[in-house]
Image 1 (spheres, helix red, strand yellow):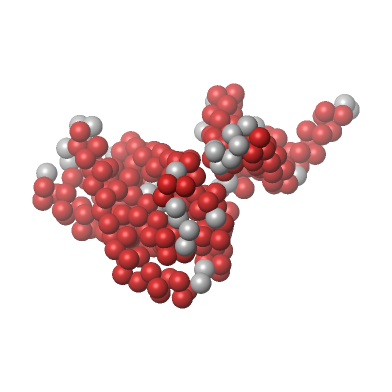
Image 2 (cartoon, rainbow, N blue to C red; image 1 turned 135 degrees about the horizontal axis):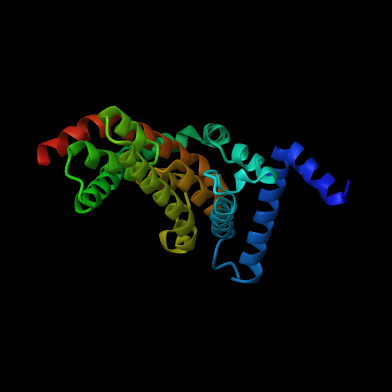
Length: 255
């Protein structure tokens, strides 16, 4: 048996360890490029995210599958490492790094950011849905909910009984929003200047997408991740409550 065959079997057998190694290599390469190629102007996290998207695209094209690079047997562990279980675990774990005194200090500002964030994202999504040719209140509400987050969209669509294609579109909109927050926020970090927990709380409340805001805060200051993750999690919960109910009735009254 050749060395390459032995190595391939070893990597497949220890797929989760392989996934950690791949992520480590990509992260190291990304931050090296950030430091030496862009002189720190492009954050390493943004480069790593772009690498991940490229790998997912190439993996999908090579295998014709639906799970990106994890459809390649050697990289199957990435499907677990990047799956919903690990994602939800890390989101919950971030709460233990938060100082609840800071959360209390945010008070009214944090609450207002949640309400405004959900309403603004929903409104933008609903407007795009209307201009995209959707006319029923159910479809418009589902797509608007997708603009809130890619979790709220399918929950709202299932509650309203819309077609699966509309639900898929709502998920796509939410994913695009999440990726945009991940990539763009580090690029404009010096302009928006999120330096304190209170600002991170408001940021998470306004944009909401937990994966996006957490990655963005990790690029700016890892200590701020729990605060953005906390309010963005509340944001998702608030969206799941109001989109299929209050906002649906509002859209129905308008259209």
